[in-house]
Every structure is written in C-alpha cells, then in structure tokens.
Length: 187
Image (tube, rainbow, N blue to C red):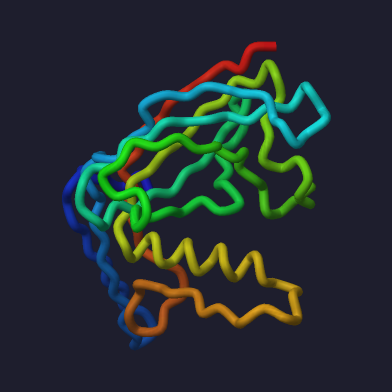
C-alpha cells in the first residue's frame, strides 16, 4: 500500500502470476469531483437520549451519472470505520445539492446496537473520510454490504459479491480519491 502514491484521474492495472495462475484487475482513481460542502449536527427526534445527536452533511453531486462514493468516520482519532451502508451512487441525486445524515461508521467485528449505532455523542470530534470511487469498487462494496446484511436471514436472497479480479481471485483492486473533513460536536 505504500509502494507508490496514486494520482487522481489515472488508471492502474494489477497482474499477479502465482502457481501457474494469472490474476488481473484494473481500477481508476477518479477525480475528486463529489465532495462534502459542510457538516453540522442536529438533535435526533426519535432518540430519547439527548447526549446522542445526528451528524448532517450537504453534498453537491456534479452533473452526469456515474459518481460513486464510499464514506468512513473516525471519532476522537480512533480508526476509520465504514458506515453500515457506506457506498452510494448518484442515480437519484444526479447534478443536485442535497443534505443527509452521516451515520457513524461501524466495526463489523463488534456487536452492533441497531437502535443507536448511527448516532454520535455530544463532544465527539468527528472526521469524515469521503471518497470518490470507480464503478468496480462501488459494485464490490455494494454487494459485500448486501451480503453482510443478509447473513443469518433465512428469508433473504443470496447475494453474489462482485469482484473486479479476473482469473477467479476474491476481493477487489480499487483506488480512492479522498476528502477529509472534520467537525467538533458541541457538548
């Protein structure tokens, strides 16, 4: 991950030869065109705990379909965790400026309290890592998150996780154009 630094609006290829097998993939680090304009907090109308609040953002989507994003949050210099649903496209919001809640990222290795996972606490210093990604990276994480949400549900449809690695490899090869934006929620 530190062998080289990727550049915005450039494409990269991966080729691995091992044990007589070949695996290939390609990705594009998009230009950083879709960004968060501002962050603010507001009270949660459905949560009786007044110490927990919602973090809101305003985003401007550039005109033209095909803008894909993934986001993560870090609280008080802890690791960055992706939102429970962290990937989005612009099928509904193409070319618009809109506001929405930034749900707190989750550590999927820990038990998730689905009543409170999305809220931040008054006094939190939050950094949002807002990334522009290509379609292959979006498809991988979108299908992976669908798979996470259906595990253990006997009534869910099976989900195939879409990889961009040709040759039968698992996972994905992707690049991120990243914006970091911080906000201190008042106590």
